[in-house]
Structure formats: C-alpha cells, structure tokens
Length: 266
Image (cartoon, rainbow, N blue to C red; front, side, top):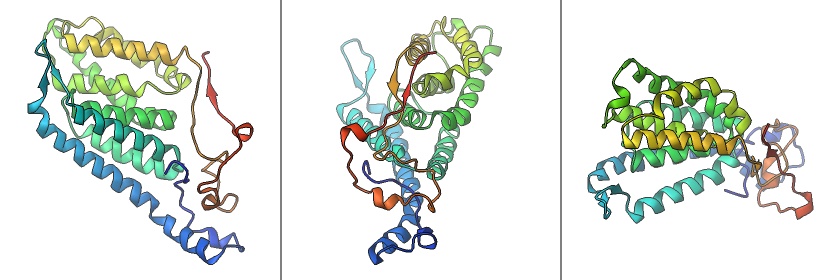
C-alpha cells in the first residue's frame, strides 16, 4: 500500500473519457477500499482484544517487573508499520471513517497499559502523525477530561496504585501528542492541567507516563521534521474530476521532483 493511493475513484468514468477497459475495472474496484481499511482495523482490534487475555502471562525481568514478550513487540511493530503506510495513502474521507472506528474502540474500553493498551496507543500515535488536526480534535479532549475527572479525589497524588482507567487514558494522551507541534500547542491549556495533576503522582507508573507526556510535548514543539510521507506529490483529497489516483499507483519520482512538507518550531 505504500505506493498506492487509497482513494475511492469509482466515479472516474463520469469525468475521464480516455479510460482503458482495465482502468475502468480498477476504478470500480476502488469503491471497496474504505471497507478494506475498516476491515483491517477490525482485525487489528480483535488482535488487541485477544492480547488482553494473554496479559496474565507477562514475562518477569530481574527486578520482577512486568515486560512484554518478543512476539508482542514484533506484532506491535508490524501493526504500526502497516498503519503508517496505509494511513499516509488514504483520502480524508477514508481516514475519517477509520478515525471514527478508532474513537469508538478507544472510548469503549479500559485496557491494561503493558500489552494491549500500549498497542492501541501506538495505533493512536500513527493516526495523529498522519492527520493531527482531525485526530487530536476527536481524541484529545476526551482523554484530558477523563484524566482530569480524577482531580476530584483529594488523595489521588498520594495513592501508590492508581485506577487503570486513569493510567490507560494517560498512556494514550502521551502518545497522540507525538505529531505536528503547532497542532499540539492549540491544546496547551488542557495539557497543562493534566500535567499539573499527574507529574507529582506517588504512583510510579503514573508519574512515568506524565513525564513521558511532558517529554513528548517538549520534543515535538522544538524539532523540525517532515509531516507527510505520501508516495505522490498530488493531494489525495482532490475531486476525482481533477485527479485520477489509479494513474499514480506504483509511480516513481526523481529525487529532485519530490516535495516534502515540514513542521518547524515557533
């Protein structure tokens, strides 16, 4: 998928009269691309749900702390790599459908933070990196509200063991801020409130997640980095009357023809 724009081109025959018979067939088939992306999401979510059942067999290291198996690390890396390739190539319409499904999954569950929760957090980070505005708008306010709801408990900072809902939402929050720094800055007020509550937690896992959140924010707002990795210089949100995505499938470019969008501090 890294060389194929994942865009519905099924209406191309209305505008492009020079389509070959093969191109007409391919264009018609692209109407199923959104279903493919959503089905892939469902399969990944099923894998995550099953990993919850496996959490009782977490390996133990020398300090008797829980750690994930090699297989779980490989699975997470494979999922993230595939999502990165896939989401970078999707149109806005297909991305939003996938994002809504992710939002439903994330907000309807409370996962442990070592195996299944970490895998979901990595998926959320991938969504945020590809389209930060849409992803943060849908996910970040909910995560912040959930974490801040624990501020009502006066002894929250002194508890050595915290509710898994708080840790899960804090984990997701720490990951989704790893996107465009200018987008993250727009949520600075909410994020400051979360950090005020969580940085001085007595719970080791809690303050480590809070420290990761702060570290990720500082890194993302102070570095220059590319923000898109499409295989084509074309914008995939153009109407099919102006841009025929299937003619970009597998297309290569000379290095000096490649355009890269960057995000810079400030």
